[in-house]
Length: 247
Length: 218
Image (cartoon, rainbow over all chains, first blue to last red):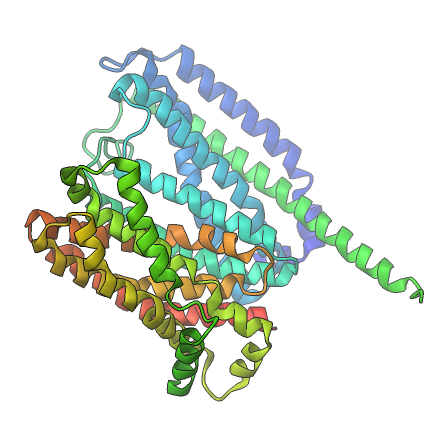
């Protein structure tokens, strides 16, 4: 019994389909706890006032925006190496979710930046890198949509995902070189000296867990949808072939 | 490989090959900019390196879909793929041909257009060097994008959507080198990084291009 047995679409569907509603409810519950805790039961930060509460949406969505691309990268590699269709479809399913996460991070960042930095947008390295990541998601999704043959589409988008990952990292460091930042450094990393205070950290952790659960629920749901859509098109193709050819 | 390069160059230069279209596009974009931002010499001189880089990038983008599309239409692409030449070398030859017909003329024309935009004289060598180092990377990345979208309807728009984000690092380092040259600051670091990107692209991207072509030709 290995993880590869889930490469069988039927086994994958049978196993994950019952999980999806549970994951949905669980993520809704965890998010509700985290957000209510964060919004109503934490003190206001000294310098930021109540605007600090947007981090309960901003940080988890930014986290998932990057992790979704990582997941697509791993899934693309699995598809290219082991040719498991479920893997390619999971990469396809994750892309729009990741794109929306990127958009949430950008929009919440803009809403926070308006009162705090006095501007909706600044060409700061982190902001710019996220905008570029958003463009990568757009191109990836557009390429999936444009190619009619599903296997070629999976191959080509996987290659694009690999090359795009390299260039995304390159862009991340290039924009560092290009402009100095307004965005604060990583204040959540485990090794940093100035982490945020525990009062904010704990509800934020709950919100991050909620976003991770939400991501899993959505990706499993969408992968199931893709598998079923593929099955329908296969059945249609079979039906067309069975029809007698009319002159 | 040399024969393929010569063939592509001949096809591009002869009638209907579209040689010089990219150059004309470069000229038009640069001429349009002063109409947009006003004719003040100080402003133009300040934005000239960036404008020249963006215009060169767009001009290189314009001719990308021709790299494989014509060969795909008349059926010579499968023949080229079955030739003894490895597909990776084919990708490299195609990129080289694209650079010789698009990138190199842009590099040569850039100083003339720089004069139009009041680019300071001390910036000229830096602009030339940065374009000469950067445009091969643009051609290589573009060849990869063209291989991904060959044979698709409306491939052109999709091609620009895919390729333009990949152009970001090249544009940043190239324009930065030209800008530093214009201000008289040492521009060695961005130039070295730009050269690194170009060499990395030349070493690795032909493999990705060939992988994409194999899928398309399957």
